[in-house]
Image 1: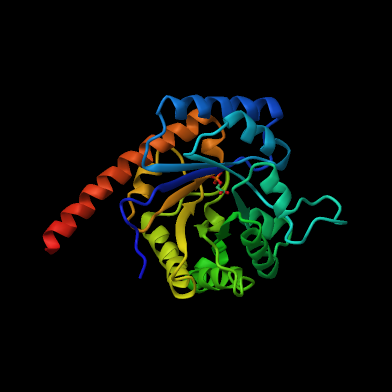
Image 2 (image 1 turned 180 degrees about the horizontal axis):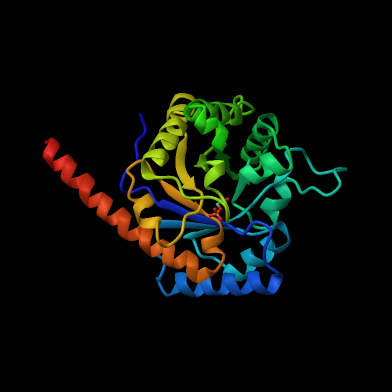
Length: 277
Ligand code: PGA
């Protein structure tokens, strides 16, 4: 059964959602590039930034070649290029510089009616286009109150993989983002709730994609104050941040908090291994 190893990079990324002009996006990319070139991005981390579609290509261009930082899209359409007004294809976002694509965020599921079927079609299309899917799953407050958190999450992950058929992703990420934890009205999940959600995701991934390199992330009101506590959870393979990383300095501050927690965690892991011998 695949487990987290201390050598796997810890994912830390942000979706800018519907924010930023070209000038603002360019400034953020410049700041991140300078930090990476000055080795101010901790080596344990793999960062990703998901700009709006209008600024994606500019961010890719301004970042230049910084292997530790991936750029991705927040969404793309699952079908081939052609007559679909207002959409962009997986191939188009890849052409604009995306290496990954976010799929099924709670805001899209609730505001735009994105269904499990559409999520599944997008995951398959992303893999076909050579993009890493970042699938978002999570329960609503009402589902949590009913005690169906784990089954809702497992159902969403299972559904998201349903279009893959014989397609084998090289890498696939799932972010557990409870709806009640996201945004200005949200509150970050407690470490026990995070562990429960991630375990539900991990179980489905290990059962259904045992040979694929997968990562499970937590998202929802992550900030510099709680990042270390969340990153310290043994099952947490990354954090997905919204508002608190909408400045490059915000992202970098969270990066340092995560790196400290990941380093402390690997010391604990080694101590456990030594004790087990
Ligand atoms: P937030 O957003 O950090 O602003 O709560 C998280 C997300 O939607 O991924």
